[in-house]
Length: 187
Image (cartoon, rainbow, N blue to C red; front, side, top):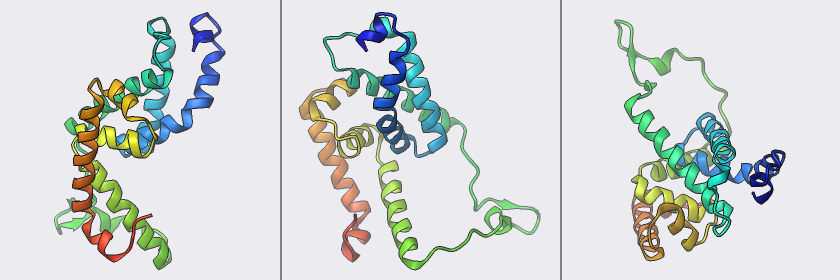
């Protein structure tokens, strides 16, 4: 980041290579959509480049990176909430046939893949169902392996507040995933 601030534009490529993958996965978990995550990751690095003079070398670069990405993902989720997507269960035509019924069939996967897919979807839905206040620190802690202090800095709160949010998020996830926890352990 210091090289980028000093005018070495190629340093942005190195930052993108080093942090791009993890940032993309974080954003996918935040917004639940790979296309949106790709756009947001690119926009994050565009903002880093445009506002490189604002970077404070006394702080960690990853904290600044995730702060920008978190704010962008919040904006995208707000935008999406104002523009709902159409459901596959939406009736079409006069007969009331659902949209899903007229779409071409996807190739069926084996039972084990189906179970794994259902389990993954259940976890994704449970995480997506958390409030933003609880989802953000959970994703940063569990999927991005960020330290509590770093999460607190990104979210602008105390480490104790982060610990409390993580505790509440995990309690809610246990309740929502009780069916899956009783049958087989999640992996």
